[in-house]
Image 1 (cartoon, rainbow, N blue to C red):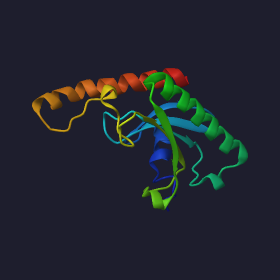
Image 2 (cartoon, helix red, strand yellow):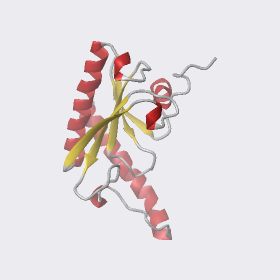
Image 3 (cartoon, one colour):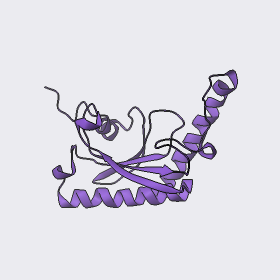
Image 4 (cartoon, rainbow, N blue to C red):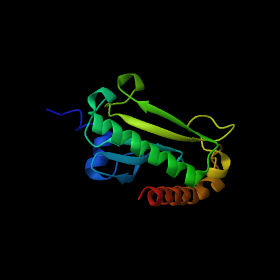
Length: 159
């Protein structure tokens, strides 16, 4: 029988060190922090999750809840230092309503810039491949390099 943790992308990241759309930044004894994105040029969201599979905040004990919030504060500090956004959003994905295949509590911090939609990086933080051209395809490697650089800087801030 498969458990919820077996099918969970966050648990896969914790267990295997890699998962679709997630780049690990930092972990301690209770939490993991990672860039949470599903396209190569998005680095504006950092997620914090408990290492133990928990679907909601009500499943966390006091120490785990405090650790998640403290790690979220550290992630917010790193985002501000690395991206210098106009502001941050703080929210959580909890349960089936969020259309997660398997629910694992994730506290998300999003870097925001004036004029950008939620989850959208401003032009100075990314390339915008709105039209698929040879130039855009050639630029994808540079975009991946930019993402790697920002991930490395976030890791340095959190480490």
